[in-house]
Image 1: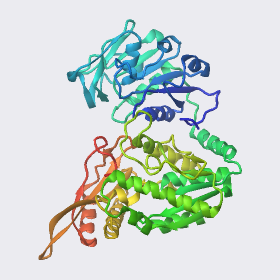
Image 2: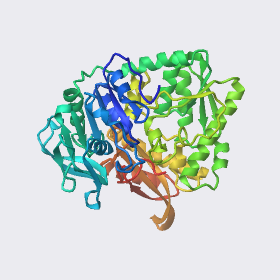
Image 3: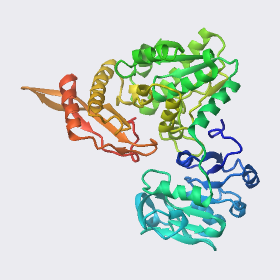
Image 4: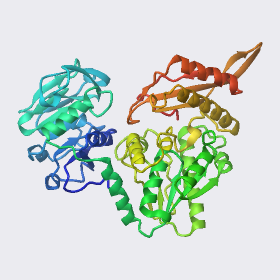
Length: 520
């Protein structure tokens, strides 16, 4: 699978032309949500002739971190604008369209916009069904100062004179904001208008296609090959395991590494589930001492991730040697892992043990990542279609490095034990309140902060536990969840009373951005 979910060559499809933006795959995902197949190609890997030959119904230019007037920035053949194919430019893509068509793009401090911004739109096909004024997500310093000949401005903000423009005759549209992110309130409507009105799509692509085609793909590509899968027991690796098990059967061996950084009772749950429910070849490796010894004294988050990534691979190599020749290492990598670890020209936000944390040399012929192009909710949909039990499909997301990135500072067994109990209590209270699906992810963090407290007539000096809950549908952006005060109060009271060593509980009310979902 090359940078995309596979498609039938006869079905309608949209090309997302990637110029190095953070949200390139999110754009493709928004298209797929509307049952139109989308695939991503780097801007320098496909020509206008190839685009025309492939029969794309439309092209979307992504954002990017560059300035179009910089000679080293990514550019594209202006002939695409006269190819008769609808084009939607987003952010950098909008500026690029203006630049290619002879407009002027400038940089000015007073035109920079970041975050939620009110946009005023004129009546236009792209904005059909969108109020005249709506909130959109801006992230730009450069702006379109003068639209090209033949284009007209169809939206503006207080700071940006051209927040959107179009040449309706050539079906060319450009928006300075990001319609693909959830913060753009009517972004889905705008994309719907582009796909179905401007491009004339029908919307006949379904997730079943991905499941069937992925199984068929790996049944062929991995025929007679031995596959070793890194099974954490989380949603991603579980779905990857069942998907590949359908493809290669007994040639798949799942290695579950209990690195001592799991949640309360998690190791036994994982082993029981995959042995009894799925009858898979499963090896459980109890490696807590090995990991904790490597992490001793380490406090820097990125170093923790690199150490854990290295050890994961080494454990798999050790198990592979016992099993004989293993051809491929399979992982439950999903797209937010890829984008946060840095892809192409995108910035590295943090390394993930199954992406950026990989050591340079591994003892496998290939790495297989069947979910690499999917977002969390799409992974859950695949899991449901594969018949994975609801309780497993909807388990709380859990990072590959485990509690190592939820213990701030040095990791010790005592700290891990304390955090496990606090986390279990918080999760129990959320579940008992029936709020499991209100928050898409919720957990406790053991901060490195200690503070004075009082219990009875005695003073205490204990840790501060931070509770975190977020609401999101893509994990690229997230809002902090407004949990009821009563739930937070019960969780706080139980944690401070039932978990020795904790004297204070706080609630994290930071969105993403500027924070990430995890603390480290």
